[in-house]
Structure formats: C-alpha cells, structure tokens
Length: 318
Image 1: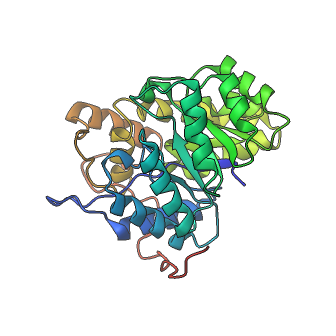
Image 2: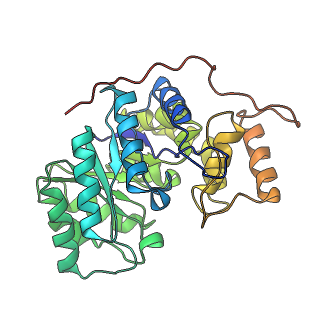
C-alpha cells in the first residue's frame, strides 16, 4: 500500500495576521497532486509545519485531506511527537478520521534509550493503524539503529520506515535485515530516492513532489520496472531542484517554490521565517530553468488550471 511517490505536502496558510489555515488552497493543491499521478500523500509532516499546528489544526488538515482524497490514494498522516501521550492522541485521531497509516518521527530532544523507543513505537502500533517510523537524525539528534529497526519491524502494526539518515550503508542493512517481514523502507530524501529504491526500497516521501509530482512519479515508476537508464536521466534532471529545496531549512524553500509556481502556500510560521531576497531570486531562477515558472517580473506560470477543483467528499472513511 505504501510505495511509490508520496508528497509530504505543505500546509497553506493565509497571509493575514492570524495565518489561519487556507483550507481551499489545501484542497486545490491536493487535487493537483492527485491529477499528476502520485501514489499517496503525507499531511502534517515536518514539511507541513506540524510543529506549529494546534491539535485542532492538525486534525483539520488530516480530516480535509482524507475527505478530499476520498479513497483514491493512501493518506499517511504525520502524528509524531516527543511526548508519547501527544503522539497517541494524534494517532488515535488520524485513525478515527480515516487515514490509512501514520508517520511517526523518532522522539526529538528527549533522546530516549532503546527500551523507551521500543515502548513508544509499540504503544502507537497497538492503536490499530499502520505505523511508519521516521528516522531523521538531523532533526531529532538520535539515529534509529538497524538492529532496533529490525526488532520493531517484527511488530505487525509497524509496517515501514522513512529513512532520512543519509547513510546508505545503514539503509542497505535495514532492507537486508527486514526482508522476511511485511515491511517497507521509504526514502526520506529526494536525492537518495534512486539509490534506496535500487537497493529494494519502496519509494519516497518527497518534498520536491509538491512542485514536480509527475517527474518524481516517472522516476519511481522507471525504477520499479527496472529501467535504470531512464531513472538516472530523471534523477540528474531533477538534482538541481533537489538541492534548491534545501538552500534553507525545510519547508521554507519548497513553500516559496509552491507559491512561485502559482499554487496555494502562504507564509511559514515562526520560528521559521521567509526565504530572504537573495535566496528567493536563486530559487526563482532555478524554477525558470526547470520550466516551472516564467522569467521576468510578471505572474508566475500556474502548474494547473484554476477552477478545476472537485468538491471534497463529506463522507469519512472508517
């Protein structure tokens, strides 16, 4: 179920003093991504600024995503926290709202010991919704070691890991050690998608797919059918974009890129701040060279037609 390209979607906010959720913009963005052939979607991850969403906003984004998707693709909701009780609350809410799975970041700042990590993930896995672990040492300050991942992979409720350690040897070991389990390894870095999938990974939870979903899907599909030549061609075509998405802290660049491409984005919330003028110019130039934005000071080139948004379904899946 959880394979291919799953964009870690941004959360659009209004550009007013309250920076409220732009619910219409979220629906429009989702419809665009689905029309481009994505394999799933991940709301309320770090790219979706989950750390600055209230519980009510977090649940609203999940609800609206589930209702808009309406069963067309899997929804994997971010529900992680460094407080197990909070993660339980969010995970239960995601299950009740009809999400197909949850993405749970390793607890940050606390730096729990191995026993604590096992209890944390096991408690969430027992809620009854598939759990994908998320290993991103650069944000959490702690690495999920292969032996720990292999142990947790034996739990039937823990179905995968999003790997963003950047350590290809570690990722290879995790894939090797979990081959006998019903468990997937998903890239957490766009630029690592090709090597991870070549090793047997299932796909990518992608930042870049917010703006180039069709190209990311084409690369993933090429890898899945064994066409390495085509996958390499797309990988190197998109590599400048992958780098541009991290000229500042994620999701600052991707949110600006989404806006420059004519989609709903709005500001980032503090403590993140807007992309500065120099980096915005650099990003805009890259988007022009990639054919995603018109040159000059005029309007950006929209990546999808306005007025083609379908109404969100009012029926929740249970």
